Length: 379
Figure (cartoon, rainbow, N blue to C red):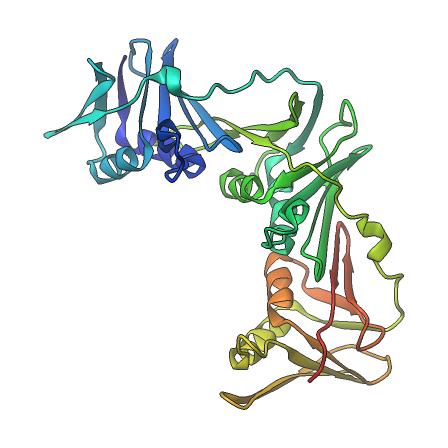
């Protein structure tokens, strides 16, 4: 195997796949990235057996076919420090490569490519397509609500489901629920409902492009053995060049909660306020919270919202906002992070918050987005 590739292009390629590497695995090859050259195309693959990322990109220079696995972190660190010049990778004996860039020369030992896990073939049994910007937005509006508790494994991810032309992502940790929906580019070949692990959701959110100028699609394919594949293009700009990304993941087995049943009916008591002032007020008041006292207090009155927090250790904070509200006066306590996470992900200028009672969930309903937040008990 012998390739010549610009340093920025190889570095970008490694950055795309290396997050799937498992350095702590008892299987040494899982700490490596697989490099393959076929028909003047470089293919990089990394996997931890649960999530795998493959990146394919064309090579401008003529290349010799071959394959090798190399330590992912070490290779990435070396390439990052090299000058932005063409670099040469040439396979030597005993699964070792010689890497040359300008005056720099490295010899890096690897492992046999035969030891690397094989990616299952993508034989599409169920396929749907959605634009990259759409899927990225759905992830941003739900990722923060995924559970971090290992005992509730089915909640350590997001429900991905389709209904006709609508793709929906759902995440909950039992104290809040985020539901985001959008149209697909075409009706799926078959309706699906699967739970995608949190790590996969995070990697997709990182890799997907904003894609504001064109509706570049993401193809989602249901595979055998309870696996799912996402395929899309990763643009790198004219100086770097882009390639094709495949993210393959095992799915979480188990029944995702029937979330529709916990969504409150629409309430006539609606607090409407500007998103940025609300975000700023909650963030500042939350500076007075502690690990044992996280709740901030929302005091609602006619066209007024007071957000406050008192702490014996740090003192107190209080901010008053002009809002639209015509319901009964009410005092409710919330975990401020639950609101900051959602407000950060939303783009709407005005946020309607439905409230019914101090011990009942608050609800935000916007086109394509639903958010339910449980209150905290007042001390």
